[in-house]
Image (tube, rainbow, N blue to C red; front, side, top):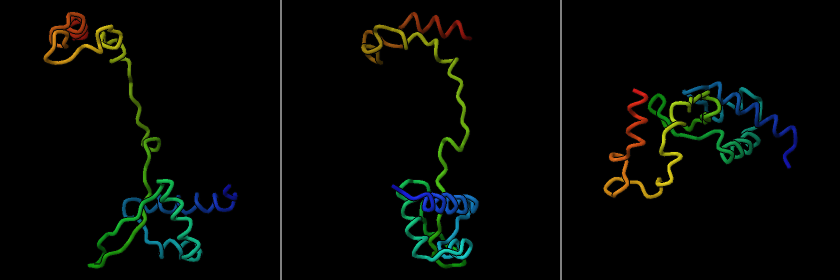
Length: 123
């Protein structure tokens, strides 16, 4: 089980990497900002990579290849909301023939009267 101190360090390091945005931050720069040894930082960075919270990428900076750390944004951070009201009444979802329905066979969407009626009702 992880100690509270290591979880707090993970959170702090993740926050600093997140703050660096699309530019990312090098491991050495991060160590200086946080006052941590590179060895201690490397251990936490490995944990964050394993948890898929950050990634390492090589980028060109002033003609040199530099390895930088980037935060991986999750769907939760994106605040995506989807309204499902428009699709919940599609007749296909309650149709008993859905498993037998498909293009090129006897039961298909283009010849379905229930689907056609529903489409015409929403127009």
